[in-house]
Image 1 (cartoon, rainbow, N blue to C red):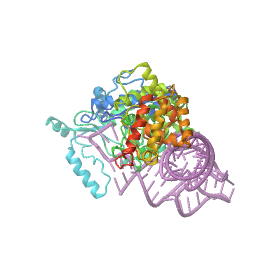
Image 2: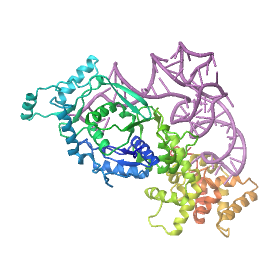
Image 3: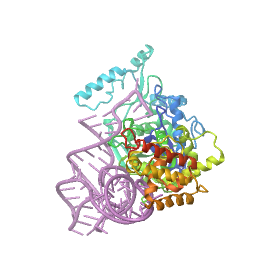
Length: 500
RNA sequence: GGCCCCAUGGUCUAGUGGUUAGGACUCCGCUCUUUCAAGGCGGCGGCACGGGUUCGAUUCCCGUUGGGGCUACCA
């Protein structure tokens, strides 16, 4: 078998969205699994909507997921250029061939006329397709119109009878009746090729072996295949991937919330978790394993494992998976990713000392076992970084508003101020010792203490978390909580979020 | 409307002409623990429907229903 070459061919008309990332990932995984090449091609034949920013967003999104390309606009390659707007002469040449062979023809219908006729057809219940008005325009008439400078586009004359059969790796054989296809535009009035023309030419010239794309393109495929046949191009193999759906089961789009891949980075997702999650929508290794690292993904990925039915993007499960990665990942590595998130929130300084970094790593190590998103560090773990944290209602209600608590907190502060060293075991001794002296269970000191120091009733081991806070800070928090409680300011309040 | 695709719990899925239909997320219990939003254990919940084919269909065929995609001088 000749070399496997797959491509991702986005149009730079917006951010890299989740669906695009999914397609790119599958095409990339397949190429990597097969030891082939993965090509990035930019389809900017939409002159009005294409933007530079969007191109940058595509690069950033792919890089975030660690999807790399062997050939592309920035890295070049044997079939450069990889940006369609830089290949206009190539398409022009192929369009001319079609014009010469009679499979292409000039169409002088205006968009307004087309719209009007389409409406009429629709109203009559006829499938709206181009009526072929300009197909057999006499040559002299064409010359006259040309001479008049009348604008025109070029259409492709599709087969009138029979059927076009697509062999799709994931769907099997799919047949389309040719009579239902209309003569479609291959060159716009502007001179730009349409998507249909450009993909076909580029997939052939770039020697793409497997066209892996989303299912929304399945219905376009007979058009592409006919074009290829007419041009004498060998057909690639096709694999149409299931779509990603929103919770309402329609194609995932803006109205479902975040569809920009990088929004998930900002929401606290790890790239490896998002990659893993994307991979298991519409694909399964067959085994009962869902957590797969990059190497496993590449090793196990096959097109046969791709499912036909679309899948809902379940954010809940994505968050769970992210939590699994957070747990498994090395604390030092995680700290590196977390740093910008903390700085964004103004919770960590710009030029920390080695000591301070070591402290952060320790915090991350303590916290990561119970987080699902990176942003949990700035919400649940806020008390590590600032005094500006809230006392949630559960803590207020259950402990901080209790009558006996202020005295207990003060007593604990007193005791902690005299322990000879600030460490897990000395802290634990102090707390348990106080409980014993008061003749109450340890929990009666531990819980109020946790509430006062963290504002929450849940979290990592109290003694360990206290060790990571400066003694002065802990003591100050205990005293402050006691004071607030005495002033009657520890009653549950409506304004406090975090009442979970 | 026409064409095409799809159909296993709410969601992601494994799987088979004969299985107690398996796993994961969510949810609910129980348990461990100083706490749970962590860990452990357990539970609820599914083959869309109707016809065939067959000794036997979740599995194969047809239809229905439902969902989705496409129907542009957007890609």
